[in-house]
Amino acid sequence: MLTKLYHSPVGKKVVTGITGIALTLFVLVHMTGNLAFFADETGEAYNRYSHFLTHQLGLLFYAIEIVLLLIFLLHLSIGVNIWLGKRRARPRPYDTYRTAGGPSRQTVSSRSMVLTGVIVLAFTVWHLVSFKYGTYYDSPPYDGVGVIRDIALLVRERFATPLYGIGYPAVMLLLAVHLRHGVWSAFQSLGAVRPAATPAVYGAGTLVGIAIGIGFLVLPLAIFFQFV
Amino acid sequence: MAHSMRINLKIWRQAGPDAPGRFETYAVEEANPHMSFLELLDVLNEQLIKEGKEPVEFDHDCREGICGSCGLVVNGVAHGPQKRTAVCQLHMRHYGDGDTIVVEPWRATAFPLIRDLVVDRSAFDRIMAAGGYVSVSTGNAPDANAVLISKVDAELAMDYASCIGCGASVAACPNASASLFTAAKVAQFAHLPQGHPERRRRVRSMVETMEAEGFGDCSNHAECEAVCPKGISISAIATMRREYMKAVLSGSD
Ligand code: FES
View 1 (cartoon, helix red, strand yellow):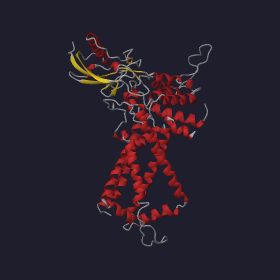
View 2 (cartoon, helix red, strand yellow):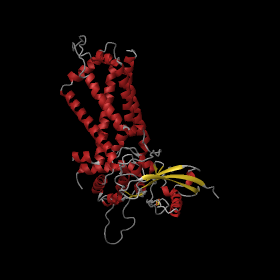
View 3 (tube, rainbow over the protein chains, first blue to last red):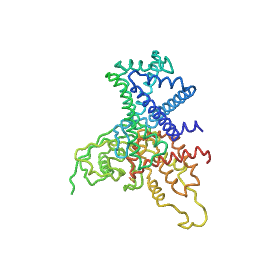
View 4 (cartoon, rainbow over the protein chains, first blue to last red):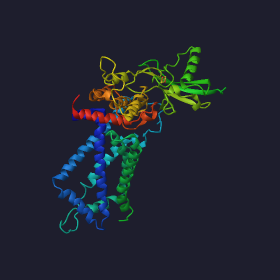
């Protein structure tokens, strides 16, 4: 039944919608966690939070990682599959094509979902390599936990470089562009949007996109411009 | 008497399904604002016939926006710039002297081109045959008011039933998806008690046929609703998804 869902035109949308909502929630949690960086001058709160996730959750942490990986792969593979299907369904494009406007939700966001999605994914891999698998600094000894990883120091170091200081905010903007169509689209894919609610859901999706974009922007910008 | 105007047309010409196609440009000198878009093509065709050339083939029947036969992509928009209007009801008053208009056929693998601007939309008939019907009892005609339907459901069913099957939704969809067409019928019957006996089987087989015919997947661009001559809402598609999930998860027919 699951493979049937994966291959059916409706099932694809439902799976993309559910995984999309899950990824949005993950990103929201991640963003909120990042704000721990601003909790104190030394980065202790941030390091403790990171230590808690990686060392004190036990098996749950690995379970979450595996589930996230699966969700990422499902979301990506269906997205690419739908995109490839476009060419099969219309091999010869129109000479002249434009949106009719009005109730249409066709925008730069909706037309570039695969592009923005793939860039965000490629970035995520790079991001894991530079932080999760990046340089291991020892923190000063903290009460209760002793010496742990000083991830705050690595964050500070990375974001001070132009590539990360500019690249990261740029990717976060693309993520906001992706979510502007994505959040609304996910609810429509689950059959959960009534016509009267469409503008509200679309607006809320755009707001979530902007909020996540800004939420992720403050940390790198603050570091890059040496506010913290 | 309305002033006449010159309209330049850039039209897709293709002699047959496998022939190479190309754009040809024509000028109609004596167009007037009261003409419909199809009448403009009629005038062009008379001109072409007089010149001993092949007239431009295009589909039409009622010319009053109710049959769904006509369908042209006009300057990049299916059925042209007027909202909730089939191209046969589009009038030349929307254009000015000297305008150039690009005219293309519906482009989709599932709608193979027959000639010029005419495409084969029989894929829609096969989607309908897969489940776009209801069971009726044999015997005497039942009493007219024997089955109660709420006003709201009756109205919604009527909104979805107004689909004329023109194919504009497929033509305008960046993915060439037939979701709005299929969903309109599924949603219509989902709102009617008469639709319930085949409810689960209907949505499954119509969705499967839609895919088998080579239509693309929906990306929720909602472009279909914007070009639909009847303004059918994409809430039909949301309903189809709920119906489909219920049918698949229940596992029954
Ligand atoms: S010709 Fe009948 S709808 Fe246009």
